[in-house]
Length: 331
Image (cartoon, rainbow, N blue to C red):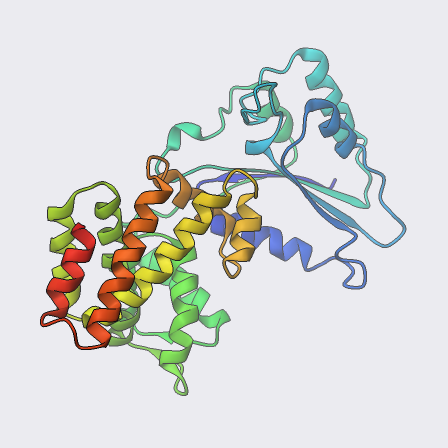
């Protein structure tokens, strides 16, 4: 029966598994036969579950459990934590039992690595209903399981026709922790560094990836008004980067963040991600959560100061580019 239940905090693996099933759809009708549902009330959910396949091959429906069943006050609650009565549960169960062989339904529950409390409760009736079908858990790999992480890095690299040296893989883990999606993103960038031998070295990782992690630390501290810590991170960057090399990605980040903040109430995470060059919606969501207390004006003012500092450095008006950048950040 084509009912599946995927859940876990390693959303990268969930997305990859969904991609495998989507690739099996008839390519001539793949857009018509593929749908993703997020904002549904109970009645709409039942309607979706009873969808009749069209005459163009198998259909695939993905239901994001975490964003279903909107309440009257527009706050979203997870399907797996909603208060469903026995009649509603029976209706869901019957709809799944009657599912057509030409329709694959995927229930997906993703939750943050930082908040394991949001994991679905296996004691709930709705969990037990869904887990009767093709159920798979996708937990993140602990950072101490280095061998397993290296194995995944090698696998992701192989898909990009790359080979990653052992010390390069360890450097990538030191830079990006246990984020498989970050490995994918960084290895995509490293394709250019590694060409034409297509072998990724530790030096390449240090040059292309590690300093970016310091940059994210730097911006985190800036937003929290922790200028002492921000200057420490900034001076770490000076060891491997000239100030202008720091300014360029910092400008890009600020531009992205301002766009996110300005459009978060009118656009979905996916729509924002597409406008920002196919940034993954999960990354958009996590970034906005981190910036929840940051005002747009704060970001705009910082970008203006950074732009002025960049102009002075490029035109030779600044005697000390390092001090110019530090003063712009401190404000």
